[in-house]
Image (cartoon, rainbow, N blue to C red; front, side):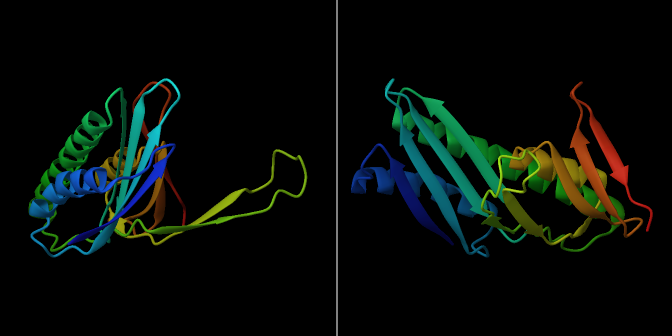
Length: 185
């Protein structure tokens, strides 16, 4: 069951908007069979040029869903972002089920939770760390890591290789293909 944290920027979140967001995003519950408890973080922004941007992040224990859409109509943006999230869930479940059948895995649990701590800037030096994330590495193969990276919208992803038990990194290359960095442990 999803709970909702709906925030508005340059817009008042009315009860009608909140209800519409909850109604649309609650359709994702059908993919999880009611076994999921998570908070959907929804940010609604309206810009001076009258466009509306909707950002939704749903951190689950096995996946982090994230999507954003911008359009002239707030309700259309909500619909578009919900459709995008639904496609992500379908793609993820299809790939995981295929991998489970191929490799004989049981339930695959991917923990993508991360806590961010902003660090104060000490100098104007470009080498200052401004944000730190802590991640729990779960065993997966490189294809699952690429899927997770694409769903998060990142250009790299760190994971524990299920075959070697080593830490690996997949990244998106400038030519649109993917690279893999393996560590010697």
